[in-house]
Length: 287
Ligand SMILES: [Fe+2]
Image 1 (cartoon, protein in one colour):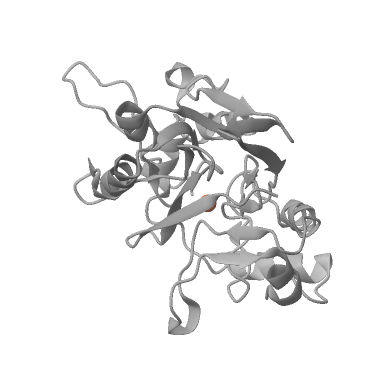
Image 2: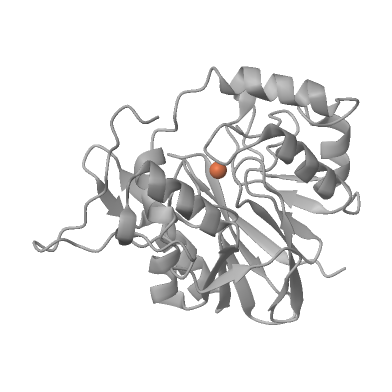
């Protein structure tokens, strides 16, 4: 199994890990889950985090084949279009994004302002579709549950799981967003646990529980044995109960409203109004 070189970038304000995944046999690379900085009070975007990724790609003279989203994130805005403008590459996401678009078109009453065929992205991946990064082969494993469009990108021996798993001591991500489902997430974890034990798993988030150091990489074996939500002897019913109880205590992510409106458009902003400014919507009493 080819072992891609993986470089992680941590975005401290949102606790997100983005990755550059490189084919060791060529200059070809993919960028996974890039972050656009966002100052919520001012509704102002900036590109500090994305510029770090760009500097890395240029410094190592990499060619960007793909910019991959594991799902429509609710906690950060995607920098995919900005990176594409600077570095090239095709923006891909799982084909389940069309369902997420339809859901949030209704929630946000976007009407004709949002087409829901996924055409904002360059490519919608089917379940188990394969793709190339130079000599590396990637495969798309459907892992819905946290969201209905969540996928895992298995690239060589490295799997980018999005929010389908957190580190073993942190468990799993919430399943209470529109389209989320704890039973479905449980089934997705079984799909990941069926991968070879030494498969490297790369998380999209870590919040350093208990004040430990940040961690973002683990293995299938470690998750199967030790994940506090879905590992060891845990049953599906126990997990679903635990997940529901925990989700009932969680407030909405700080950036969900701007993030989802940008991310279901593949990171693009809505069409500017006649004064040249793009606006986002805030639905009152909807969440
Ligand atoms: Fe997420």
